[in-house]
Length: 205
Ligand code: TMP
Image (cartoon, rainbow, N blue to C red):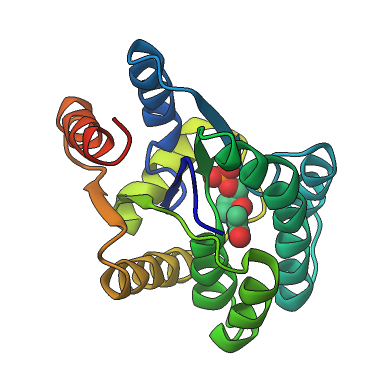
């Protein structure tokens, strides 16, 4: 499938400030009168949100977790992502398949090859046009998380888990540098937003 609209994904370690920047992206695209849909994973559909609740709170094997992530993703792609891209909208997903490679493979040891199979099955030719990676050192990420809110299952994991996730994200970014835009979350919000703006102007406007 060739995208009529643009598919943008947001990725990063927990605590990297995605929420703040999502608000900025929404306001920026609204000001430009761009037709966009902001969605998230796991989630984005009624069933996906139920699966999110299970995924974020119930213990399960990493393989089960991977398959449930893709079950939610299948619904999300077929009910939200593809239909909106076909209408020419910009679809922005707060996390997508890179998160499965980072968390379930990088963090929990699921083999990349198993994820490759599910990805091919569920996504077919769909892939993001642009991925913002909010990158942050694990020390700062954990410090921020401890200050903010009640932590979910993933956020409560130890430092080495978060280190492995960051490492995997950076490896993915290097392998697909044509679609990744790495943002240093330790920079000022203003500086990060300027970089986001430049990239959105390039890809969307
Ligand atoms: P969020 O807090 O950014 O909304 O993401 C929810 C959590 O789910 C986050 O800790 C990352 C995790 N996650 C995975 O482990 N695998 C995935 O494929 C996705 C999409 C999210």
